[in-house]
Length: 195
Image (cartoon, rainbow, N blue to C red):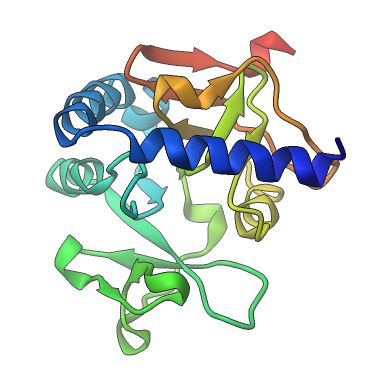
């Protein structure tokens, strides 16, 4: 099976597994993931955190965003525009700043309220994905937005995922960018040490 087909198979499998979670499991696992994430020194040291805004089925990042804002941290969210190949980044002051404005119904600020953020200001990136391996390799949705963004980032890259999303290995290409840490309900795993 080629890499593209294998990634497609993994995407379908992970989406099905996420859809199989009960509401109670999503809440319980999400609380554990948040607790482990907040304990990371990378989180504590970051003044500006870039976090995706979760969609149904993903690990819920809304509690993280609220917690970070309440503790005085700055939050930037990705802005996806159809026809553009790269993410833009917008700082928000509250979850209420977000609307289903983006491509695919993603929550982001309306165009007139986007306050841009330079990537050099970002101290931590919270990364989405469908599957990961212990070396930090990830399988996303396949559009490449995050790989293009993460490729130039010096800030720590931390993925949040359910434990079943961490596989023994995932297929990668040279365009794929690995994360530094994967946080699941079972704890935090530092990937780079695995080589």
